Image (cartoon, rainbow, N blue to C red; front, side, top):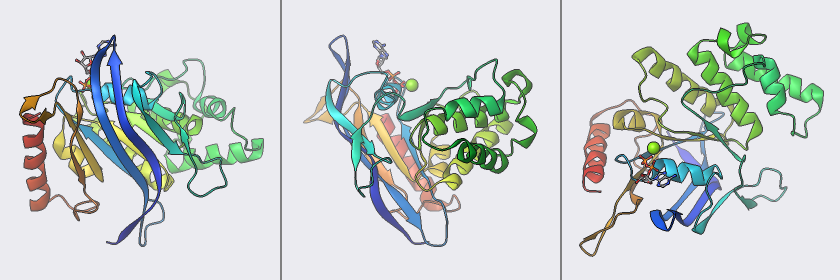
Length: 276
Ligand SMILES: Nc1ncnc2c1ncn2[C@@H]1O[C@H](COP(=O)(O)OP(=O)(O)O)[C@@H](O)[C@H]1O
Ligand SMILES: [Mg+2]
């Protein structure tokens, strides 16, 4: 199926992060663009970050969400508030939403109250906010939950509420660090469903997630980055960087049934992880 790329949504250039002078990741650069597909109304972007433990995936996410300051480099995102077509702005805390594994929500707020609170800084009118909340509640199958508190929700419902809450208070970007780890099959399906909803709700919605499950990464994403310790001129470094990148759209593998070519890519990614 044909697709084309539009403006850049996320632009990372020569990013490096250090904790107490120890370089954790270095020379991380990437560009992710808005993609549109013929015949599909909304196609959000799903991007997987894989790599062995301790290579810097979570550290990279902390830089994207503004929780740690880069030592060098820059992170720009599309400036949705600007009228100019290709306007970008440096990312700051709050611009990119983060959904943690426990789907933390306000204990004393109902789903509706949580989503109203998430929109408090929005420039929409109250009527528009109410409509936006109603639309999401409907599309994300949360009608029975509007007046419920977090302890009355299932794990899946909590997660969907947490994702919408982060989407409302951020700029179309969501990060999920290892959303599949430790889940049973049913819960994995719930998370996959949330990924689909996210992508179907707006063409700009962009999800970055990390996982140790390479098959899931290939099934769910259109871009995969392997973070590992590079070998440069025969010298193995001890910081993380992007050692391999795969654009599954350009490879003809995105949005397709998992098949022989996907299995080949699986082996290739595992190999890249093993050597880095
Ligand atoms: N707050 C911190 N202070 C010092 N070192 C840290 C801190 N957080 C992570 N690290 C180190 O940074 C490296 C990368 O960690 P992390 O980003 O969590 O990797 P990953 O998510 O890929 O498993 C590890 O060596 C880890 O010990
Ligand atoms: Mg991690």
